[in-house]
Amino acid sequence: MAGADISWLRTRRALPIIAILLISACGRADPSQGGAEPGSTELHPPATGPVETIAVGEVSGVHWELTGYRSREGTCVDVHLASSSTGGCGPVRTRGALDVLGTGFGEDLSGYIHVHGTVSDSVSTLELRTGGETENVLLHPSPSLDSVFFVVFVPREEGGELVARKGPEVLETYEIRPGGPSFVGESASA
Image (cartoon, rainbow, N blue to C red; front, top):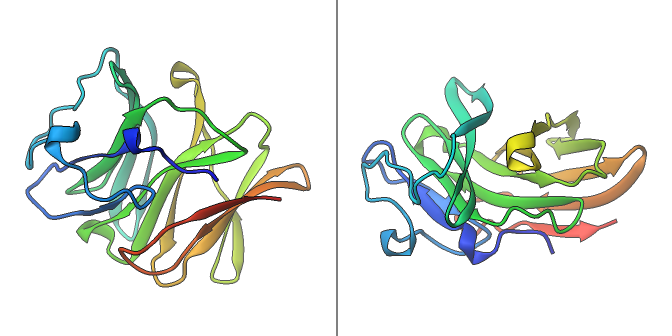
Protein backbone atom coordinates (compact mmCIF):
# COMPACT_ATOMS: atom_id res chain seq x y z
CA MET A 1 0.00 0.00 0.00
CA ALA A 2 1.33 3.43 -0.95
CA GLY A 3 1.42 6.16 1.63
CA ALA A 4 3.79 8.06 3.81
CA ASP A 5 5.50 6.60 6.81
CA ILE A 6 5.43 8.40 10.16
CA SER A 7 8.68 10.26 9.40
CA TRP A 8 6.73 12.42 6.91
CA LEU A 9 4.51 13.98 9.57
CA ARG A 10 5.20 17.72 10.07
CA THR A 11 3.24 20.97 9.93
CA ARG A 12 4.09 24.64 9.83
CA ARG A 13 1.68 27.61 9.94
CA ALA A 14 2.51 30.93 8.33
CA LEU A 15 -0.25 32.68 10.32
CA PRO A 16 -1.80 31.67 13.64
CA ILE A 17 -4.72 29.83 12.03
CA ILE A 18 -5.83 26.35 12.92
CA ALA A 19 -5.25 24.12 9.90
CA ILE A 20 -6.38 20.54 9.82
CA LEU A 21 -3.64 18.18 8.73
CA LEU A 22 -3.96 14.59 7.70
CA ILE A 23 -0.92 12.67 6.57
CA SER A 24 -1.89 9.07 5.89
CA ALA A 25 -4.14 9.11 8.96
CA CYS A 26 -1.15 9.60 11.29
CA GLY A 27 -2.65 12.56 13.12
CA ARG A 28 -1.56 16.10 13.96
CA ALA A 29 2.07 17.13 14.04
CA ASP A 30 3.69 18.06 17.32
CA PRO A 31 6.56 20.60 17.56
CA SER A 32 8.46 18.14 19.79
CA GLN A 33 8.38 15.70 16.84
CA GLY A 34 9.98 18.10 14.35
CA GLY A 35 7.11 20.51 13.65
CA ALA A 36 7.29 24.28 13.94
CA GLU A 37 5.90 26.52 16.62
CA PRO A 38 2.60 28.19 15.63
CA GLY A 39 3.22 31.40 13.68
CA SER A 40 6.77 30.38 12.74
CA THR A 41 8.03 30.63 9.17
CA GLU A 42 11.33 28.87 9.94
CA LEU A 43 12.05 25.61 8.17
CA HIS A 44 11.98 22.65 10.54
CA PRO A 45 14.32 20.92 10.15
CA PRO A 46 16.65 23.51 8.62
CA ALA A 47 17.50 23.20 4.93
CA THR A 48 20.98 21.91 4.07
CA GLY A 49 20.68 23.28 0.53
CA PRO A 50 18.43 25.46 -1.60
CA VAL A 51 14.64 25.44 -1.20
CA GLU A 52 13.10 24.56 -4.56
CA THR A 53 9.69 25.68 -5.77
CA ILE A 54 8.50 22.52 -7.51
CA ALA A 55 5.05 23.71 -8.61
CA VAL A 56 2.68 26.67 -8.18
CA GLY A 57 -0.97 27.23 -8.95
CA GLU A 58 -4.30 28.60 -7.87
CA VAL A 59 -7.49 26.85 -6.79
CA SER A 60 -10.70 28.82 -6.19
CA GLY A 61 -8.69 32.05 -5.99
CA VAL A 62 -6.22 30.64 -3.42
CA HIS A 63 -2.53 30.56 -4.37
CA TRP A 64 -0.59 27.37 -3.54
CA GLU A 65 3.03 26.22 -3.87
CA LEU A 66 4.75 22.86 -3.59
CA THR A 67 8.30 23.28 -2.28
CA GLY A 68 11.06 20.85 -1.45
CA TYR A 69 14.50 20.88 0.12
CA ARG A 70 17.09 18.58 1.62
CA SER A 71 17.63 18.46 5.38
CA ARG A 72 19.42 16.27 7.91
CA GLU A 73 16.15 14.26 8.11
CA GLY A 74 15.95 13.63 4.36
CA THR A 75 13.94 15.36 1.66
CA CYS A 76 11.27 17.76 2.95
CA VAL A 77 8.20 18.49 0.82
CA ASP A 78 5.58 21.13 1.76
CA VAL A 79 2.28 22.34 0.29
CA HIS A 80 1.89 26.05 1.10
CA LEU A 81 -1.51 27.74 1.02
CA ALA A 82 -2.29 31.39 1.74
CA SER A 83 -2.25 31.03 5.55
CA SER A 84 -0.92 27.55 6.27
CA SER A 85 1.37 24.83 5.07
CA THR A 86 1.62 21.08 5.54
CA GLY A 87 4.35 18.64 4.73
CA GLY A 88 6.99 16.34 6.02
CA CYS A 89 10.56 15.07 5.82
CA GLY A 90 12.06 11.68 5.21
CA PRO A 91 13.35 9.47 2.45
CA VAL A 92 11.42 10.04 -0.79
CA ARG A 93 11.09 6.67 -2.42
CA THR A 94 8.23 5.74 -4.65
CA ARG A 95 7.32 2.22 -3.50
CA GLY A 96 5.00 1.53 -6.42
CA ALA A 97 3.89 3.48 -9.45
CA LEU A 98 2.68 6.32 -7.21
CA ASP A 99 3.24 7.25 -3.61
CA VAL A 100 1.09 9.73 -1.71
CA LEU A 101 3.31 11.73 0.64
CA GLY A 102 0.57 13.79 2.24
CA THR A 103 -3.04 14.90 2.24
CA GLY A 104 -4.73 17.82 3.92
CA PHE A 105 -7.24 20.61 3.96
CA GLY A 106 -7.59 23.81 5.92
CA GLU A 107 -9.48 27.06 6.18
CA ASP A 108 -7.90 28.37 2.96
CA LEU A 109 -9.55 25.67 0.84
CA SER A 110 -12.09 24.06 3.13
CA GLY A 111 -14.01 22.66 0.16
CA TYR A 112 -11.00 20.73 -1.15
CA ILE A 113 -8.65 17.94 -0.12
CA HIS A 114 -5.12 18.39 -1.42
CA VAL A 115 -3.02 15.33 -2.16
CA HIS A 116 0.67 15.42 -3.08
CA GLY A 117 3.21 12.74 -3.80
CA THR A 118 5.57 11.17 -6.31
CA VAL A 119 5.34 8.88 -9.31
CA SER A 120 7.93 6.37 -10.51
CA ASP A 121 9.86 6.61 -13.77
CA SER A 122 7.55 3.95 -15.25
CA VAL A 123 4.52 6.31 -15.10
CA SER A 124 3.83 8.12 -18.37
CA THR A 125 0.46 9.60 -17.33
CA LEU A 126 -1.29 10.31 -14.03
CA GLU A 127 -5.05 10.85 -14.23
CA LEU A 128 -7.48 12.28 -11.71
CA ARG A 129 -11.04 10.99 -11.91
CA THR A 130 -13.59 13.02 -9.98
CA GLY A 131 -17.19 14.10 -10.52
CA GLY A 132 -17.55 11.82 -13.55
CA GLU A 133 -14.66 13.50 -15.37
CA THR A 134 -11.06 12.49 -16.04
CA GLU A 135 -8.18 14.93 -16.38
CA ASN A 136 -4.43 14.51 -16.75
CA VAL A 137 -2.43 15.62 -13.72
CA LEU A 138 0.65 17.77 -14.33
CA LEU A 139 3.82 15.96 -13.31
CA HIS A 140 6.67 18.09 -11.92
CA PRO A 141 10.15 16.58 -12.28
CA SER A 142 12.72 17.76 -9.77
CA PRO A 143 16.19 16.56 -10.79
CA SER A 144 17.73 18.16 -7.69
CA LEU A 145 15.40 16.11 -5.43
CA ASP A 146 15.57 12.99 -7.63
CA SER A 147 11.78 12.68 -7.90
CA VAL A 148 8.74 13.47 -10.05
CA PHE A 149 6.00 15.15 -7.96
CA PHE A 150 2.27 15.81 -8.32
CA VAL A 151 -0.33 17.89 -6.48
CA VAL A 152 -4.10 17.58 -6.91
CA PHE A 153 -7.02 19.38 -5.28
CA VAL A 154 -10.19 17.30 -5.10
CA PRO A 155 -13.65 18.52 -4.06
CA ARG A 156 -13.97 17.31 -0.48
CA GLU A 157 -17.52 16.04 -0.86
CA GLU A 158 -16.79 14.12 -4.08
CA GLY A 159 -13.44 12.44 -3.53
CA GLY A 160 -11.85 10.87 -6.55
CA GLU A 161 -9.27 8.46 -7.83
CA LEU A 162 -5.70 8.80 -9.08
CA VAL A 163 -4.75 6.44 -11.90
CA ALA A 164 -1.07 5.90 -12.78
CA ARG A 165 -0.55 4.62 -16.35
CA LYS A 166 2.25 3.45 -18.59
CA GLY A 167 0.69 4.03 -21.99
CA PRO A 168 -2.73 2.33 -21.89
CA GLU A 169 -1.72 0.01 -19.02
CA VAL A 170 -3.00 0.89 -15.53
CA LEU A 171 -0.11 0.46 -13.09
CA GLU A 172 -1.77 1.59 -9.87
CA THR A 173 -4.81 3.44 -8.54
CA TYR A 174 -5.29 5.47 -5.37
CA GLU A 175 -8.74 6.19 -3.95
CA ILE A 176 -9.34 9.65 -2.50
CA ARG A 177 -12.33 9.16 -0.24
CA PRO A 178 -14.82 12.00 0.17
CA GLY A 179 -15.33 13.66 3.52
CA GLY A 180 -13.39 15.27 6.28
CA PRO A 181 -11.00 14.31 9.05
CA SER A 182 -11.65 10.57 8.67
CA PHE A 183 -10.18 10.75 5.12
CA VAL A 184 -7.84 7.91 4.33
CA GLY A 185 -6.73 6.88 0.86
CA GLU A 186 -5.92 3.45 -0.39
CA SER A 187 -3.65 2.31 -3.15
CA ALA A 188 -4.21 -0.76 -5.25
CA SER A 189 -2.06 -2.27 -7.95
CA ALA A 190 -3.86 -2.92 -11.19
